[in-house]
Length: 263
Image 1 (cartoon, rainbow, N blue to C red):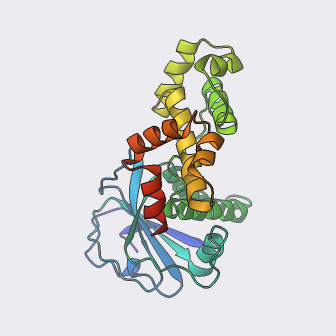
Image 2: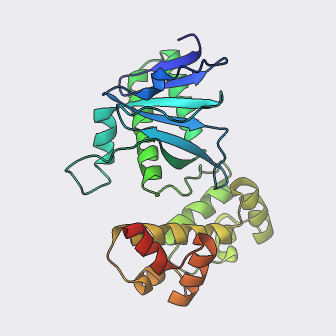
């Protein structure tokens, strides 16, 4: 296909346009063996640093008119469904995706580009690393479908930022202060705050509350547990504190969210 750079591997294939692509998108209509995931960079996502992906099950035709700025990923049916089955309890069948839109964190591009790089270099043991990249990409997509990748930030290369990030991820339920985070790496609070916001886009404390919210969302989706217990487990000082914060971020109350998610 001269219109695309093609990176074809046993479990998935990646197609990237290299010129103006014709209106014939039959390649992306998927046969019985492939799931089709198209990341169109010209579709505006609601969340910052996210891209909109169009997901289709095998034998589903693409309905969208694509720009010329996208990646198309074909994932083998058995490979994708085996990974999806790790996340769901329903073993009776796979859900069907018909031009289903989901927002995927832009960090996935790093893994797609690594997949393309490994595919093109024919390096020693490349089949091992390509399988690893394929597995990681498929997990990333499944988590996005299930709403569990609201923030899949890359780990910072700056030690103080990465150390603070790791600590927050492990101790989010505890009382955490900027002074405590700064003391972990022997930098000033102002220096840590500046470097953290520069790399992560939010302050350390904002990041902490985003982590707490994500943990709460996961509990609300997966467990039959009271909102009070969720609030306490995720580090909020009270149910009312959790409810106010939740409503400010999600534009609905926790009870409304649980009702909406279960419907």
